[in-house]
Length: 305
Image (cartoon, rainbow, N blue to C red; front, side):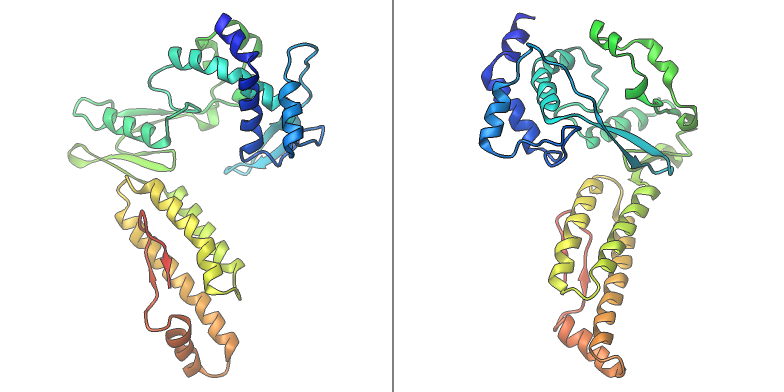
């Protein structure tokens, strides 16, 4: 406790906490006070103001985001000052939590990724003596229903939290039927052959995203379109590169090729809509020059024209 007290009262730790909340992806989203720390002077004053004396958390700014099932998920946004306090005390609480946490948990854990969780699934489900049934569960309104008083008084997880499991998202699945986890489908096939592939939902989402980008950039230059497609393709491919994704990459490659070809045809038609021969000439000579369209969804590959 003495070390935690020293850390939360350290000016260096306060500067680090302010740095964390002013450089992450949510730095442009204010709380209920509609105030953001933008200038170096504001950030320095913020670090100096992080004191326990007379501190009281402000209400959350409530927003709603759409979930996959069509429902809305409530999202609470703290003020910049409250976020800085949270970041400051996280520096003191995280070492304790990491020491006592379950070795098999991966959610919201530092230096652990989705690929680590998928790897653990493979290790435990691919053996000859592995379990054949999987419980798919999700806690209903976890952060809304969890006891904050209990969190203050305890470190280990209380078994009573299991009463908050969502029935609509909970089911028991045989490993031969497969289950979706973190964008992957994990399924045991014949002869104890466990395969991990991109899930149908993940494939559908990236197809929709790529199509939206192409439709949005009709009439744009090829370089602009490629610049917007590349991050989506590369990011998705890098995430699924360690799974059995060869056939999926090939399928998406063909779909993306067709969508880009239609995009190019629309530009050729706009250049001269009354001459089919001009369209062919435009596509092969002007749009793609001497090379045919070469699209590759590869771990390190890009969309190339």
